[in-house]
Amino acid sequence: MTAAFAVSGLCKRYPEFALQDVDLSLPEGQVMGLVGVNGAGKTTLLRLLTGLAAPDAGSIEVLGHRLPEAQVAAKRDIGFASEDMRLYRGRSLDWHIELVRRIYPAWDHAYASELIRRFDLRPAQPLGGYSHGQRVKALLLLCLSRRPRLLLLDEPTTGLDPVARAEVLETLADVLRDEGRSVLFSSHNTHDVERLADSIAFLHQGRLVAHADKERFLDNWRRVLCLGGGAAEVSGWPELAQVRAAGSQVEIKVRAWSEDLPQRLSAAGLSVQRVDPMALEDIFVTAVRTGGAA
Amino acid sequence: MNLNRPVIRLLILKDWQLFEKQLAAYVLAGLGALTLLGLARPWAFYLGSLALIVVVVAAACFAISNSLLVERKEQTLAFVMSLPVSPLDFTISKLLGNLLTFGVPFCVLLLGTLVVILSTPLPDGLVILATLLFGHILLAYSVSLAVAMQVESEGWNTFAMIGSMVLVNPFLMALGQIESIQGPIRQDAIAWSLPAALILGAQLLVSVVVLVHTAWWHGRKAAFY
Image (cartoon, rainbow over all chains, first blue to last red):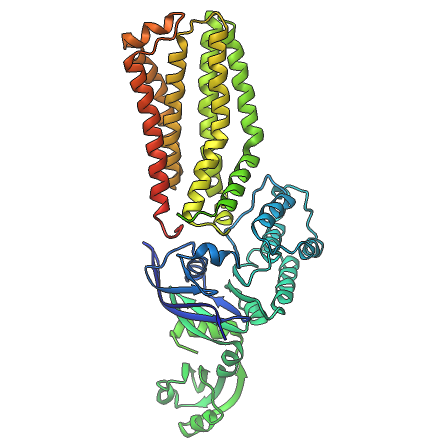
């Protein structure tokens, strides 16, 4: 399977921040969610993937093009929308559509019209009169209607009200049904990522903390509640991300679950009371705090 | 040099469409100033020439600040940079777009000024002073444009624009100290002296060098950030 993008040993340094030694790839047709707190390096990584920024070290290949050298060719097949990207307030959506349509030959006019209806946008109105949610939808429309092979979305749902967020997520879910299209979207909202992504990458302080298929993430991580006094004995086990004791009760967060783990915990003096799957948000917080891998 | 010419053309057209109404207003204001100049009376001459300088300087500052500083501030530059353009394509489109949006009102008002001087009782020698004055504004504009493309700080950009444009006053005073320039402008014949020709040549040369250097500097960059 060819890669929509592949980065290796990627580093980018700014005075206050550095993205360090990132190795990551996305097979074509897959959806990857990039999760991280503000300042984790998500925007920097997306800028590098669009050729807007040049790496200090490492290599970037997007849709077979080496970046940033071949950024023009790559950007013909990339749809990029970021939270800090704005359209011209004094101009209408129609004006923007005409501008973008003339640049991208694959512009899908019927799909653009459908998105205008679905998003309930007024194409002749200057964008200065649009709400934040409408502006985000307009930007997505301009990205999606050019039918890009790779969609890069930086915080697409940030700042949206619940209704607008649902509409945007539904549209993205529709887009993702097209198996030929690859998507990388960043968010600090793990619920959005859990809903849409095939694979997930956690970024924290410029480093890739964890990266795996969503199912593997959810299958591997467990929250185990035990009773007993063997917390100190098991805390060094590599498959356990976190062991916290409160009196006789011990909460264990497992990063590599296996069926024989309860037996081994019992042998170590811990009686397993219950085993629960973990939500992605909890996995993310634990992974970041412990610096652990999936 | 591998330029994406169709997209560069579209981006220049975009800048023109964004600012055409405001620039038309500057041209209209400039024509009002030229009307005053054309009355060829002392009070109208001083009022008209002052208004003309203000209009041309304002048009220069408007073109630079709206196509670069406001785009940066309002985060529309990110949208443009996401299109299939390289840093060189972007730089060329910004330089040419700016030269077009400022160049049209600049040329209309320069030609209008020359026509007014030559077709009214004003001494034709004023053509020299007017040309040098427009040359100074062109130079100040080129320097301000180069700074705006290089420096993101709004403060430094404002300083570069205001600083270079207000130098028009000392520049006019300095011209008044050069007898070979001051003398002919009161006459009804256009007599270019060597100092006047040298000053005009230097203005044009430095303007071109500044703009070409800006294009070359940005063209070397592999990426925007």
